Structure formats: C-alpha cells, structure tokens
Image 1 (cartoon, rainbow, N blue to C red):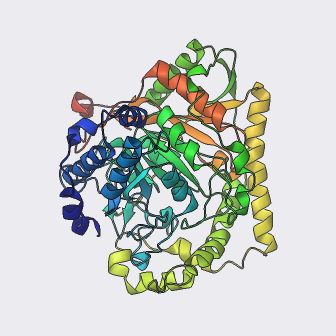
Image 2 (image 1 turned 180 degrees about the horizontal axis):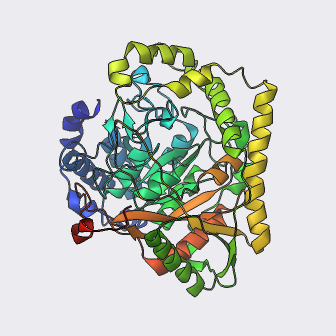
Image 3 (image 1 turned 90 degrees about the horizontal axis):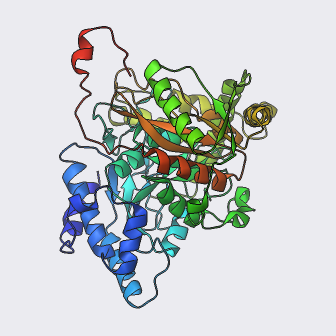
Length: 526
C-alpha cells in the first residue's frame, strides 16, 4: 500500500478550516459556489477530505476505497486559491478535489496500478488526456481509488472491489455487501464523501453498477466522447471513462470538463462537437409530453414497488410512459465475450509496451506468468482464466473477431432502436442493477437481476443511472438510456426525476443489514 506513508505528509501540511464532518454530503455544485464566494478555500476543503479519508478508509468502517493519495494535492489547492484571489479562477471546477480510478494515469508521484502488483512501479509521469482536461479546469487530483483488479476482467469468478494493491472495498450502506465492480473504490469513496466526485471507467457496467449500489449518479458516456489514452485498457470498442457523483448536476459539471478530441484516440475525432456546459440547461429541462419507453425486467416484489414509484414520479412530471418488451438478444453474450477477449490481448499488450522500464511485465503473457509467480498475493481467492483465454486469441485481423464485433454491435444497438421505435420515444428507463450482494471471497461475485448495462455498453451508447430509492436498506438505481450522443437529454430527464423524487439516502455504514422480525419468518431477501 502507498497510502500510509503519504498520510503524515498530507495531514500536517495545513490547519483545516473545515472539519471532516462538515464536508459530508456537500454537493460539488455547492462546494464550487462556496469557493467562488470566498466562503471556503480549496486548501480547507482538500484538507477536510484528507481528514475524512484518514478517519474512515483504514479506520472506522475500513472502506478501503483509496489506493494512494496525491502528495501534491494541497499544493495544487493552494495554487487554486491563489488564482481565485488574483481574479484568475479557471471555472466551476477550479479548486474542487476529485478522485481518479487507479487505472487512469496521472503525472503526480502515484503509480497507475489497475490494482495489480505487476504495475506497482508504473509511475508514468504523464496525465491521461481526460485528467489533463480536469487539471486545465483547475480540479485538484486528490488521489487514486481502489478497483476490481484489472477492471474485473482477469476472472469470471472475481470479487468486485478486490485488488492485490488495495484489498477489498466495502459498501458504505452495508459493510459486508459488494460495492460492485470495477469502479468500486470510486463508488464507495464518493458515497462516503471522500471527494466531491470521482472518475470511473466502464467496459460493461463498471460505472453504472457501482453507482447504483452505492447510491450515486453515474454516467457512462457515448464511446468516443472521452479520451481513453493512458487508461489501462480492456476494449477499445467499449471502454470509456465516466463521472460518478452524488447528484445529476455534479455529474454534469464533471462530464462537461471531460469531453473533447484526442489525436491519439481515433474514436474521439468528433468529440469537440459535443463539448458544452451539460449542467447549464438542467434547470430548464422538462419531461412534459416526453415519450419514454419503459422496460420492465423480472424483479422482486419490493424492487417492483420502488420501480413503480419511480415511474409515477416520471408520469407526474408529464412523461408519457410506454411499456416495451426487450427484443431477442440471442448471441449477444457470446459475441461480446469474444470481442472483449480479443481486444484485451491486443489493447493491453499495446499499453504495456508504453510503460516505464521499471514495469517488467510487457505483455499479457508476462502478466499471466507474474500472477503464477505471485499467486499467494495475486490469486488468493480467484484465478486468471479470462487472461489465459484471451492469450489464445489470434488478433484483431481474425475474421472471427470482426464477425463477433459486428454481431454484438448490431444486436445491442438494434435492441435499443427497436424499443425506442415501438414507443416512439427518445429515452428508455429501466432498473439499473439489483441490490448489492454479500461479499463472498470463496464463491466470488453473484450478480443479481435486474441488470441493465450490456445494451448501452456493447452499442457504445450512453447510460445514466440515478438513485430511485432503497430495497431492504440497499440503494436501487434507475437507468436512462438513449442513442449515441444523447447525454444532454438523458441528464435533463434524470435531473427532473431526481429533483422530484429526492430518492437518494446517505449511507449509514452499518456492519450488516438487520432484518429484525422479518428474519423469523418467510420474507423476501435482497
């Protein structure tokens, strides 16, 4: 761990003007407003977050959401305060402390590990372009969040939120429950108010699932709006970074600074056209007369009650709800599986070739060998069968890969288009992800339905999740999905719903759920 050695340096650098408790649940938008008014300094806010992390990440509830803290964070905060005092503030994110998932490179003295001991020396001295954009907007990079190792692609029997570098992330709503992967540390950290917001990444579900089960707003953008350069990859077809926050406005503010072209990432060639202030139009957003396709999956009685209540809120705000059935998705899972394995080998090999000489693993084959040599640390609970399978794939010129890619995209985008067309709608709503399951080191993850990530993930289209309530004390998210480039529409709809529903509940850090008298008899379980 690199956290403990840095804490004394960080925590003695300034006397806080804001207690750690005072930063709890403070929205990014309000923090930004207080900074602008001079009611709060960035240094004080940064110190308060550091104090809160010190009290809760390796103490108290032991969330283990943070892998490393940035030794330059307080200096960056003081620089932001100096800019503001000189009348040269860079915008609404100037001086706002943020966290970054530890598969995204930063030029600070922090390694980018993807949770693996094989990358413990991966100090690249370079910012991923998405981080560079945040710095240009004045954001403070507070530190790196823990994650499901290798973004949950090493094994199909993994524990979401576990990495050899960071240990097991715990869910702030019930500490024995999964935080979901792979942006688990970002989800738990933002829910626990360790920062104003955080960056996550998603290949299939890794922004929206941890956002849903940690009571957050998460946006998985259209692939190609946000650069993936210098982010440890899985799949260039599906990977994207996305904002995770406690409100739609906060997510929109962060997303606004993330969008833009990157010459090193061809997928972003048209991204500058999508640059805008995504938070500016939220107050004028409306659902009146908006046709919304409603996808109702199989779910429990209590889940259905929460979903029905959310639909009633949408309807009360003027939305016209049209129930649709999910089209046949036969073959989607197998095709996506093939694409992700093929692209993992090619993309990870390309990334590892750019790492510093101190990183000895230069290929997927090297990583497999490293994990075998360090099995006690790297594979105490689950193996690396997905890595081993990917190593057998032939490459991106393989006709089987190209066929699988075309098939998976056609099925996923076709399903979304079919549902939208049948409802004559622009938005689909559906539950995001069932409640967090128990952390099971022996048995690994056991994802429960409903789960809504795959269609948007495989198509590369946007997906927003917003808290819609709780089932048995565990958060339950509402998904808003649409066509490529519809982020503004989804954020507007999500904002109207959020402001009417007020469904988010702050975490209580209970060790385990207490079912009380219900446990004595036949009762539904999450």
